[in-house]
Image (cartoon, rainbow, N blue to C red):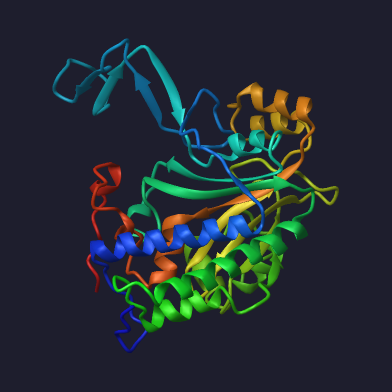
Length: 347
């Protein structure tokens, strides 16, 4: 371990640090999963199921050969598309693995996986230092009906991971523990994580509790700067989320975010899953009429009730390392769409 830099500035990482921090975090999270008796499952990055509310990309398979790929200029077309692909089959690419991990709990009560995900970037997100196209979610799911169980166990998972990270850092010469990295990582092990409702979150950022929509990125940072440990936001009203969760008798959805302190903002999103196929179908239609009936059928058949969340791996890496940007965790061997994102010039 190297200890350098005497302030709380972020910094750009070298590739050897990128690999070292990634390995350290994965070891630490898997250590937590072992402590709490979770079984690791294999992720399925491609699926015929359409995840309700998700902005999927697709993979196209050719017929015993590569699909026909035509870039702009290779064909005469009245469309504005830059690439056209023709093949034999297509599948949706995973955005969150939320349905698949639920289905696994029919056979294993507590599961997790490191799931590769691909998400379309919205306007301006490429400049946020928090968003990339392809990323990894440390997806966790288990049988429970109570948000309190999630809060308690989620906190223990990060607490144990934080302690493991601090112990591993001491023995790795490729890791530089800056004051910022030390402050951030130690915040994971400070103790109890506060819990506030979404209504309370709105009040803390100066918005009316009756206002519509989720927190903006600016409000997200403003809120998380009010805390020095991770904290939970829960009980979201209708119209805020783009996925489906159980609606409580009080008319709020049993969904939550685990937020990082010091302005870093959202780390995980999750919730209590719908309790019936009917609830799945009704919410899916509200999100845009796109759903795969197999999820609803499975829920009614299995009667398995679960909750969970997905930890954004690169976001947690940025936090514990004190890195300048999530772009610092694009691996050297990655030749995918993340390499098209330009790092903003620091002022």
